[in-house]
Length: 104
Image (cartoon, rainbow, N blue to C red; front, side, top):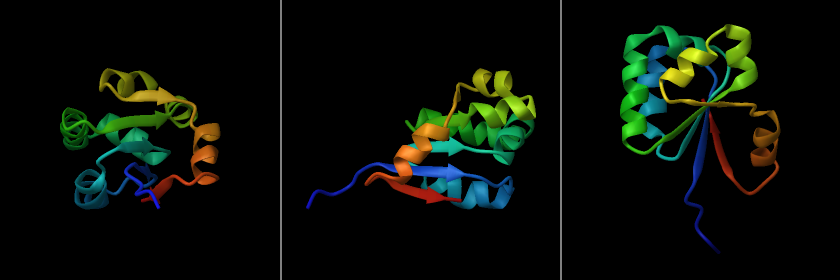
């Protein structure tokens, strides 16, 4: 049996404590920003610093384009070097595959 080495983290809430004490402490592979966190990151300097630190540590950070567009934060996220793309189909693929997804 092969050991899985990639973990996707789906971040769906805009709680600062959860972000600092779980999301940014635990994510080592891919962080998917979905919904309220897109606006939260775009407006909160402390979260922007956490994003920079995670990117510097090699975490792939990406955001749902549909959410970012609806919240009017797409360009801000891009300026933070966050990949912004449509995540509906890729998320469905993760959910229906053998990949590991943690939702926070």
